[in-house]
Image 1 (tube, one colour):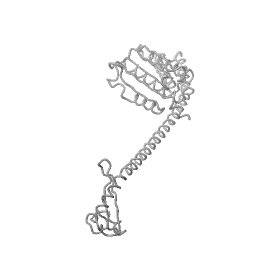
Image 2 (cartoon, one colour; image 1 turned 180 degrees about the vertical axis):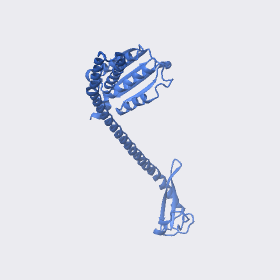
Image 3 (cartoon, one colour; image 1 turned 135 degrees about the horizontal axis):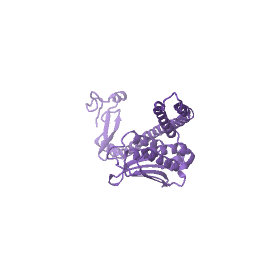
Image 4 (cartoon, one colour; image 1 turned 90 degrees about the vertical axis):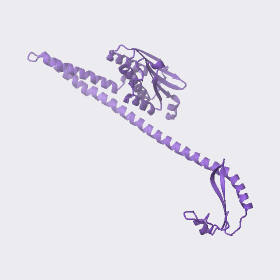
Length: 316
């Protein structure tokens, strides 16, 4: 409390916010703290143009009023902070969803371009290589051409054609589009084991009752790419003897599990780009991805959960 704020050093000192006092000609002033649970959250000020107006009774009254107002002001501030936090969180979600949708649209465009390139390679490049291989075969039977000289060239060309066919198949999963998800996974399992020459035994269990094939094509392709990568990792790097792929629908979600009995994650064999690609593909379609070791670190367990409710909300 002061009788004259213009001359009281407690109110009038270098660096203080004194301008309102002089501009309004304020003299008598009372300052009491606004407290909530012992913490000062502000101050209640009462001012008058008269000098020596307030008494200690006025200070006590001001304190009583401050006690009543402090909880109200604290609630207002908390509500404002909560509102600001909600706004910031909502804006962050909108930005994240915008980025996710943008990335998903880009993925769709890349997938379409990938399929177009696959068809172009099949219709033009592979056809040209096939004609070249047949011409080399005819030349090998000519009397003035040595078959031993042409044989390595023919063999290299055949290997190139085989690699090109594999690129085309990877670029355009025709089995997935023609026969469905389960058949495409089974086809990839058989081909991967055959090409690896490892003799891994495989098992595919499909408990989705066809629900998985009702998903949007972009979603289906993303799930297939994730499953492909998990199978490739298990067969190429895990040294597994058995590989299980399980598809099922439970609790309103489509789930895919790829389980092997190989060397597990402790060797760091799956810390590269493959696992990051699987995580990214899952995130783009709002699916939950997890990878971990089986019991006693025997093998690896890859799981993808896709909530069907999320897909319905997106369609609406």
